[in-house]
Length: 182
Image 1 (tube, helix red, strand yellow):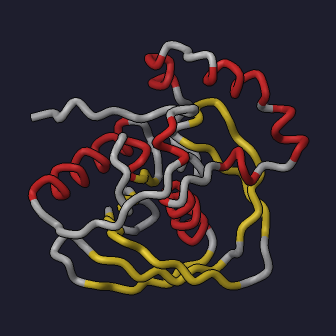
Image 2 (cartoon, rainbow, N blue to C red):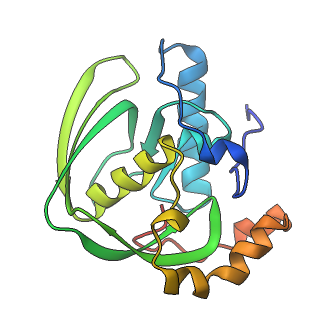
């Protein structure tokens, strides 16, 4: 049964709020996570944060890719290391907008799973970048905040179109999954 949740697009104010910690993992959280995984796969994303589906909660999910299972991260904490490197990123809440974003290459994350059990993972490269991108959403930060001025200029038309409220049905026209569709 579908909850009717969908992807929230820029400039929706929920994307700019700092998300609230999850106090209790109950049936509504399990349903939210199920919807988040479904939407991330439907829109061919790698990850999705709760604010991107209209829930201001500190949760994000990642999809099964490159041998990694689907995961949920509840109330995550990140520790980042390494000299920053740039790589292209996109965002499901910012369709048709891509830019080089600089981030540290290594991340250690501690979070809760759906059973409320704490776990810690360490990754570098793509998964470290995905975690940082999704964690940014929990802080009310988007890739447009991290873009270089030249990338903002290159994406200004797509941003302006989003801010004017385009037809949301065009979002299904995303190109096939690329490494950085977060």
